[in-house]
Amino acid sequence: MAVSDHVDFPTFMEGVKKRNPGQTEFIQAVQEVAQDIFGFIEDKEEYHAAQILRRMAEPDRVVSFRVCWEDDNHNIRVQRGWRVQNNNAIGPYKGGIRFHPSVTESVLKFLAFEQTFKNSLTGLPMGGGKGGANFNPKGKSDAEVMRFCQSFMTELYRHIGPDTDVPAGDIGVGAREIGYMFGQYKRITNRWEGVLTGKGREYGGSEMRPEATGYGAVYFMENMLKHKNDAIEGKTAVISGSGNVATHAAEQITKQGGKVLTLSDSGGFVHDPDGFTQEKIDWVKEHKTHRRGRMSEYVDEFKGATFHEGQRPWSVACDLALPCATQNELNEEEAKALVSNGVMAVSEGANMPTTLDGVHIFHDAKIMYGPGKAANAGGVAVSGLEMSQNAERISWNHERLGQMLTELMEGIHDQCVEYGDQGDGYVDYVKGANIAGFKKVADAMLAYGVV
Ligand SMILES: NC(=O)C1=CN([C@@H]2O[C@H](COP(=O)(O)OP(=O)(O)OC[C@H]3O[C@@H](n4cnc5c(N)ncnc54)[C@H](O)[C@@H]3O)[C@@H](O)[C@H]2O)C=CC1
Ligand SMILES: O=C(O)CCC(=O)C(=O)O
Image (cartoon, rainbow, N blue to C red; front, side, top):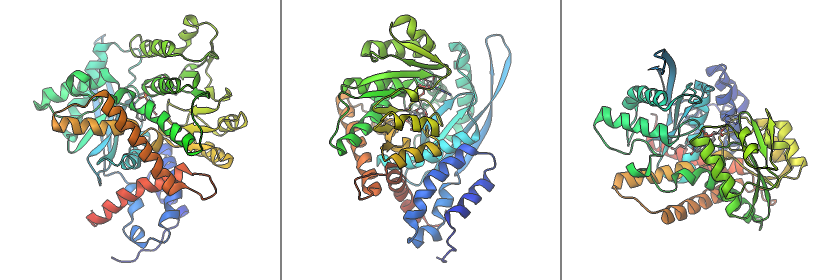
């Protein structure tokens, strides 16, 4: 193979910006990974010569399609759907589907890129993908959501399959939406196969999948603390979001003897100084998932709590922080506030919730900082186990899956330490996750030659 010119990091990023104009989230995600990978491959000519990072930052394909549906008033609505298939070097494309008005091609490309590294870290055979639509399920009836999901799957089904691409849930896509989409896939193809994960338990879903991302993010936090001979018990935690990831993270912090002080939604955050008990968390789950209500209503139900309209929770003093809502929800100023209030550790349940400037603040302060691609990998890991169970036509019990999740998160933590230990007692978990995730995918790509 010819020896290539070594492109340096700034030149590489110039190219990424030029080829992806205006795709700020995608550029941000690539930059965060590339700065570590350039250090790692500096003396490794084979990765340069084969243009591995350049190829990883160019999705295998981006499918975009029209999603047409009829609302309850018989108006015809038109939305745009996408599936980004980023990389399948180590297994079928795998990653969630997001329904939210903020969805763009840039957002889905960043998520599919991140997913490639995350899935590699799990050690399971899964490539990276992500999909979604700029559809807002908020305020829609069940019948409207069903018609949208059916229309979305009527196009998506031809691009996916149990050995090709296996989507799952993400923001705005939970058990209800997965049910409607799986039903439509089965109806069109006349095949019952494990083409989606996060399914209901009655029809092939896995035990522990609903809990896996939030619990996993707390297990990652637990592992970071354990590495420093510390524990969650007795610590206060600030959590953003109030969806699947946030409520399960809150539940697991509480189970381990921590005190959760906040939860939030796009309207603002609730501060409950008495802590979110299991009873309160169950109320939030029911309120958000079934009544589809707002967090502001929490203070009518539980006295002593306050609602902070239009604000995010990072100014509340805490030992632990878990951003579990969405991308770029924790900026430089907010990171500074957390650090000056004495935060010890951050574990990201959401994907890329901290801006690049915010990440620098955490690094400079040398606090324990677990990036999403490592800390929230428990969800996709249990999805991988759902695929295995579906393929074997078996189902494992809650206890067994709980044990497997615990071990998977410990394994991910240990890989981060292996590649991120700075030798002075500080572990750069971002660097560790980026390099460990990169290496497996890169080596598989090298094995395939130029494809
Ligand atoms: N569901 C899963 O298994 C996984 C989810 N994630 C990530 O976790 C995050 C949350 O996802 P889920 O809990 O599944 O979604 P969800 O739809 O269950 O909940 C999303 C939560 O984020 C809040 N939110 C959305 N936009 C917001 C904004 N602009 N400001 C403040 N809050 C906002 C919503 O109110 C809601 O509480 C996302 O970043 C997602 O990509 C990561 C790994 C797996
Ligand atoms: O379970 C899955 O396949 C998707 C999980 C996901 O979208 C994520 O890890 O961000």
